[in-house]
Structure formats: C-alpha cells, structure tokens
Image (cartoon, rainbow, N blue to C red):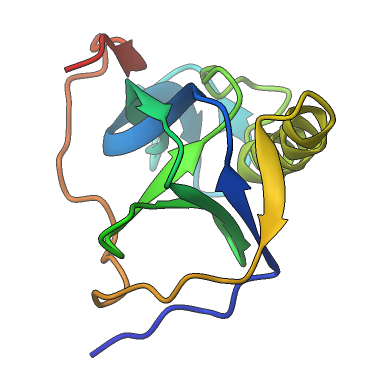
Length: 153
C-alpha cells in the first residue's frame, strides 16, 4: 500500500474559498517529438501529447484542511479523506511552459496559500492524519476539447 509523503505544513480552513479538485486529464494540444522539441503539430513523427489536468470547482469549508505536500496541495476533509487540489484557477499548458507547467502551478498555489492566510481564510494547524492510501495517478481521460474546469457538482 502506498503511503502519503509527509506534509510540509497544514492549514485549517477558517472561511470558505474555491478550490479545484482534480478529476481527470486531457491531451493538451502540446506535443513533444522524438528529439524533445515542443510543438503544437501532432502530425510530427514520434510526437507524443503532453497532458492537462481537468478539474471540478468546489469549496473548501471550515473543518477541512489544506496540506502542502511534495508534488502538490491536498484537501483533507473532516473524515480524513484526501483529494489533490489546485488553489489557483487552472490554465492550459502552453509552448512556453510545456516542461515547467506543474512547477509554476505549485509556486502559484503556494503564493495563494500566503494570501489566504493574510485574508483570514486559513490558519496554521497540526497535520491531520489522512485515513486512506495515497491516491494513484488520475486514470479518467477526457477528450482534448473538454473544458479544464467543470461547474460545481
């Protein structure tokens, strides 16, 4: 059974705010060819698509916890269940950030955490134990024209 990497820090949700739950992935329209050149032309020989994550808009509510863990931000519910989330509005991968997209998103999410602390939405807390195995990679695949964000369920 996979275990969770230790959290860098945990923050209790004090006031509600929007988060984006990861629900799947889609081909991005950005490709990498056999020589690792980035292109938007999927017809190039040996071109492989890069992927965008697909999200569902949701609310983090009091009693939830945001944990900064290696590789991303996790929303931990009152019941100890966890979901990978993004705190900043999702954007599609581009030619300019083809290989740095995830790193840039994580940096933006960590900056968003600081703003949420300043605004009183988050407060420091002890790390809540996650009561489920670490999630496997997202297996749901959407069509390339599927929106990055779906409305709240």
